[in-house]
Image (cartoon, rainbow, N blue to C red; front, side, top):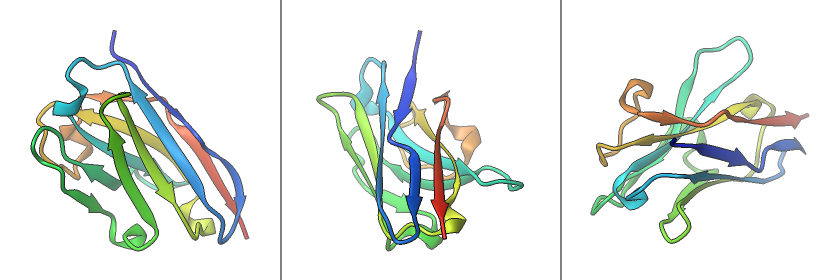
Length: 125
């Protein structure tokens, strides 16, 4: 059974940093594109960041986080991370990790095949 397990969420003051991690029990993890999505209170789920799989190593970000968040992956340990700097109260959300066996970057949630349970990030002002 495929599992994606997120960790690293928590409570942080505005301007602070967090590093989210997602470990996936996927065979051929390196072939999957990996993404991070979030659901803010009262809002629809939104794309945050993605990194390609296979030979595709590009990244893509939500405009609002482009200068503050960094997505990376370590295929040796089946892990994708999201480093979040200069966090703001509007970043408060449940953050989800997702895997897309297509390999190419996709910002649409429907393109992703496997999802984690989420990790809560709360940013106080």
